[in-house]
Image (cartoon, rainbow, N blue to C red; front, side, top):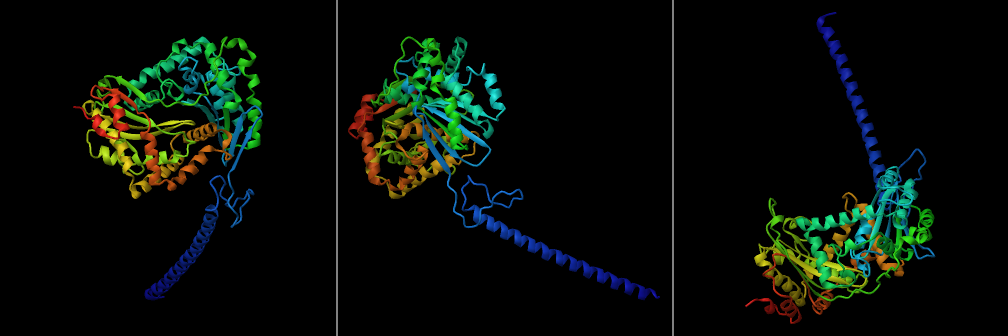
Length: 552
């Protein structure tokens, strides 16, 4: 065979092999395309099903272990929310959700608001004593060992009118964790050493707060409540020494025996079956087994009754002349003074509550380092008309503090000491010019901003957000009492806020008149020698004229 013939045969064989490879590749490509098309069809079907399901229901994907697949077109399943009120007045609320972990908590109608007759600061001492030791746990180490075995975390926080004990844990550890919380609430063992440690912790916080720039807002909030509700209910100080040195062990037990009663509590659970949770709570939360009922010698001879009087807005001023220069040394902050103007607001049960919320959203505001970015309210008036036009204003913000029976609406500004009186004039001007009405576009933006702000808070992913959401819901249940038929008053509040679209210019004018008809509350903090007197502020607001604030 010639070489030429040999090469021709080899080339023929190579051509046939190449053709076979091409055909095989085409066949694989066609099969791959068919598989991709099937996968795309399956995903599209699953997406259509998933879009009809709430987040509390697992996606109905194919499962070889026999998980039930919800057929296409099935109606979405609602969340199971239930509430039970026991004979002793204790309310138990649950919302069963999908997942291996639960969040539980107890809201107690307590806090500095109810300290009348008791040594001031006692509610903070109770907060610091939480999860220390009890009849079933010798110390904090035993408590946290129990929590660790159930992947649990606990927290206790107090506000002006609520004490919240909250925890998150695995479903299987719910009974154990609720036992820990019940022990802390009804069966704590308090000795002189533990009490002194709690008072020292509170004392350290009182000393530390004025030394931190970021804590000034906390102090200003406390001071404006003291000025607005002088010597009653909401106006009792949350921070400050008060008469903490006079608190005895028997005083703590006496306060807890008055505040920690079933009718003043709400127990809530998210992610657990309602009937199972009711059984757990009923077993652990029996007031008859409280340590003060079984050992009456722990109580003082005479225990004051809890103050249930309504809050009385008074107006007034708190001036704190203080050298804040040490706060700026070595830090990128200028030397500032701070002023807060407060006027009587309303409680969250008031018909004008939503209108006040929209007004706060309209004024908005914040600090110099938060002026940009979506959701920061940079189109609110405190930015556009104060901070953007007056370079010396470091921060300006409006707050709406609402409680069950009253509230205070505040506007705050921070500026160099030489400009602090000018800052007060600008704050008063912001309130007075509300009488001129609101542009429809601006009002619509404020309503939208309010709704988005609430929803973004609920959707937050920061650590501990689930506990904070739980606390907000439980606190709302407690404050709203049993008048709401729905489970979580927070949902009712959100529903009301979503009716913010109904807030009109006339509503803003009405709540503005409500503000201006009250006496002002004033707080000055820092170097406030140039800050005008309270009388001129009262005249300027009463007569709707800024001239009373201008100095001769």
